Image (cartoon, rainbow, N blue to C red):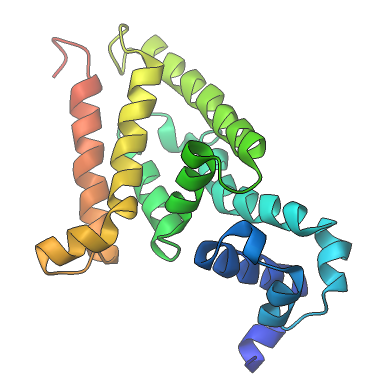
Length: 204
């Protein structure tokens, strides 16, 4: 472990190590000892901070998704132009951990690994907050009154998750990396699609 890593708080090191381990292998194959060794920490620190392996697993997911959930309570989505910024926030959160959407998909769709109810609760919190934002935008006349918030959410999730789920395939097909500048342009383009598609008829 290098000096920079050693300088990080133990809790943060354990979260990073857990993410690396759980993304690389099935949940039941990952041991707390392996995570602790990768973090350069004593296994007792996992019990101290998280209680057990499942507690660490859930905290790892919470810390990855929290910036996205927090944005739903902030000013970013006070207008339809904010969809570009929210997409960019998602891409930024996932670009260094491109396997994370696959982990979520594995848990929810394939029921592999623990935390299904926990992840569903986090996503439901996001759904509720997002629906509130949609109603606010409707009330302000920024989007059409007939927009179904669930359809909007599914469309948004599709645009957000698909590039990360199929990143390797897309990069191979395009012959170029989906790096930060590329994802910034993608977020701007998809955000523009949303803004145009949600605008009430006659106000475009």
